[in-house]
Amino acid sequence: MDVMGIGLFKLASSRLSYLATRHQTIAENVSNASTPGFVSRDLKPFEAALKEAEVRLARTQPGHMGLGSAAEDGRFGVDSDAPVWEVTPSGNSVVLEQEMLKASETVASYSLVSNLYKSSHSMLKLAISSQ
Image (cartoon, rainbow, N blue to C red):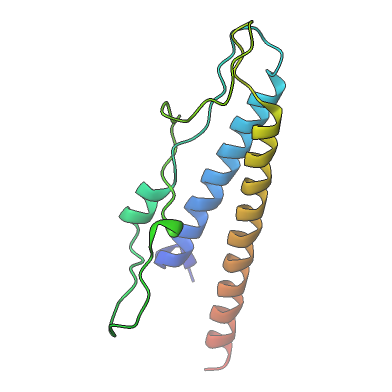
C-alpha cells in the first residue's frame, strides 16, 4: 500500500523535507558566521504547502476550532523579508543566538512531525491488520 496517496502522509513528508532544508540553511549561516559580508538566510514559512495540501479541517460544528495562524508555516525558498537582528561592521548579519533558536525550533518541529508520521503509520497498520 502506498501511504503517499494519503494527504496526511504527503503533508508530513513535505514538512520533513522543508525542515531538513531549513536545518541545512541554518548550518550554512552558522558556518559563515565570521565571513565578511555574508547575509544570514532563512526559508519562507511553510504555509503555502499547508494551503495547497489535500488535508482540510472540516468544521461540522460551530464549536470546532480552526487552524488559526499557529498552524500556518510557508514553502521552500529564501525569505528576503526575514528580520535581521544586527549587522557587524564587516557586513555579516549572522547572529549565532538567533541561529541556535531557529535550529532548536527546527529540531522540535522535526521530532513532532516524525512522531506524528510514525503514529499515523502505526494506526494505519493496525486498522489493516485487524480486518
